[in-house]
Image 1 (cartoon, helix red, strand yellow):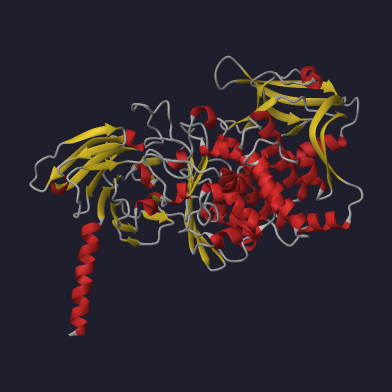
Image 2: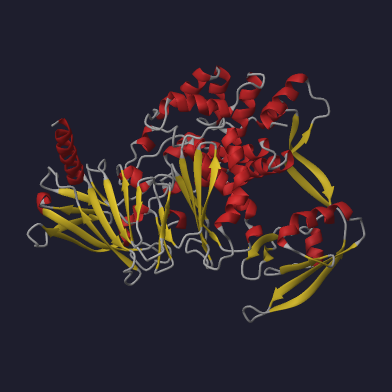
Length: 619
């Protein structure tokens, strides 16, 4: 009798959950005009007479309003009696439907974002590819779910059931856990709309592998149309890094499953950019398909950054993120923490594990510092910029989160190490903040600095208030002094040069290209560079991208005053794709240069400087 009662209650609860759930159906085998048809059976227990069905204006991690409803067409609502129900389109993302209790089905078509720019507004606001969708019949379906599925306002915290019909042999790569895979269909379930948006899915013929980091299983999925890059190659490139990051986080990750989803493209992107978008249990990458050795370190650096988002903002975040409003988003003040600290950790973990040396690390940090001064408003409060980042006048400052934001992380780490005699750094601070908050508990924006001060000291609180919340320049001289490094704002030196042209990379010819000549120094003018020149040889040796760093180092170390320097270039002709081979030459001589923000190791370090440097760097 008890057994029967249990079964009865189970069936009732299962039906109750099913009635409350969103049931979506998408047939990936029926792509028409580059569009997918989406069919929704909404929850049955809608209480309102009138509802708003919404597509997101923005999603976490993008810091850009994209209005994903722009890509939706042929929106229809069918009633339980088979009659079409009328609706009103309120804006590009919102459909007002009534009577809601009579809805049987909602259907619409969706364009992908990777190659669509002829819809209203799409030319002016191209979606950064890692935040978008790509539909390629029988090849690949890259689905950032926010570009495909909507929700009913006030009903986002419901179960979402996604049923995908798929080409035979296709696999659903995702960080989501509740996936029932079949030969021609998959069913995926997520707890609510926030979790749905947090879980991109890539359908393709699988090229996958896994990496074990402690108790966590890391999936690596790779789509490379011309098979230039494989999941096994990416995994071998990332394995050492991920193990180092695991140790950096104390040997235990806050997630048991994680997915790296890599989409490599053999054509230029609409946005003109490449990179990744982070999620709690995965990250989605769109990168150019080229010789794997050319992007090896780029993959490592981007993956290291995205992976560390499992700490911020997954386990440490403000209410603006924890209760994210997809259609009226409000920004948190603390991008220095979510993006800046994450970027710092991505490089610092590699330093402490010995994957890069101290010179490489300091070169990266100093380049970020230089960029933050030259390319952004250094006097603007970082918290103000973060809070107002969606405003056009402020949004141009956003990329500084990866520049000055990372340097803020380094300064904070050094200051913490110095105060604690090497026993406490940002690694410890983030652990303590994660314990205080956590994935399901958000902090108030205005409380974070005081909470950090309570965990550390008034000195740290003052640093945050003055240099992050305020507009004071970062105290670089003082910070570097604590680790025995001398910092000089400006000095004059005489050095050899390669002419100082502005450079880019031609992906078609796989050669370094002169993008501009306005900043040529005297030696560059003597050589006679012209815009469009593509480097072929340096002093008779063919320039190979994979060996470029060693070649340049050899050039500078072996060069003597008065020696003839030769640079072979391919100069473009009037006909596109045709070049003329030209040999440029000039006698080597040292050029007067003004160097800004230079650092050098002090000769005599005291015991505290040595201790702070050692515990901070891991050397």
